[in-house]
Image 1: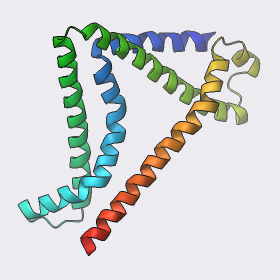
Image 2 (image 1 turned 60 degrees about the vertical axis):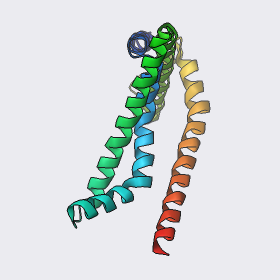
Image 3 (image 1 turned 90 degrees about the vertical axis):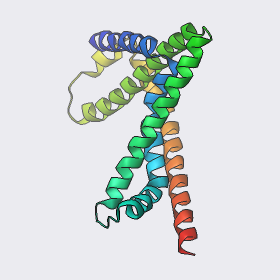
Image 4 (image 1 turned 180 degrees about the vertical axis):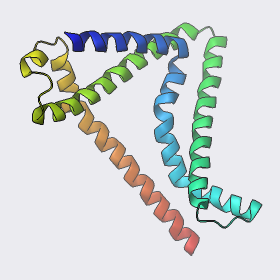
Length: 180
C-alpha cells in the first residue's frame, strides 16, 4: 500500500513536470544524456584536434576535456532544438498538445524509473528481507511493475547495448580512416 502511494505521488509529480515543460523538452531531457555520450564518443577526437590546433595544448587531460566539451555541447544542442520546436508548437497554438503529451511522457518515464528501482530492490530483498513477500503481493501495482521489469527492461538494455556497440564500431572505422 505504501509502495502504491509513493509511486502515485511520483507519477502525479511527473505529470505536473511534463505539463510544465512540454513533450519536446521532456523527451530531450530523457534522451540528451544518451545522445551526449554517443556524440562525445564519436566526435571528441574532432574537438581534441581542434583544441590542439587552436591552443597548441598537448596534455594527458586533452582527451577528457574534449569528451566533456563534446558531451556538454551535444546536451546543449538537444535542449536548444527542443526549446525551438516547443516555441513553434506554441506559435501554432498546439501548446496544449505539447503540454499534455509532455505529461504523458513524464508519467511513462516515472513508471519506467520506478520499475527499475523495484527490480533493483527485488534483487536486494531476496538476500536481505526488507519487505515481506506478502506485503509486496498486496500492492496493487506490484504485478505491473514486475511485468515491466521482466519484459521491457531486457529489450531496452539490448537496444542500448546495440547502440553502444555500433558507436564503438564507428569510432574504430574513423580511427582506421585517419591512420590511412
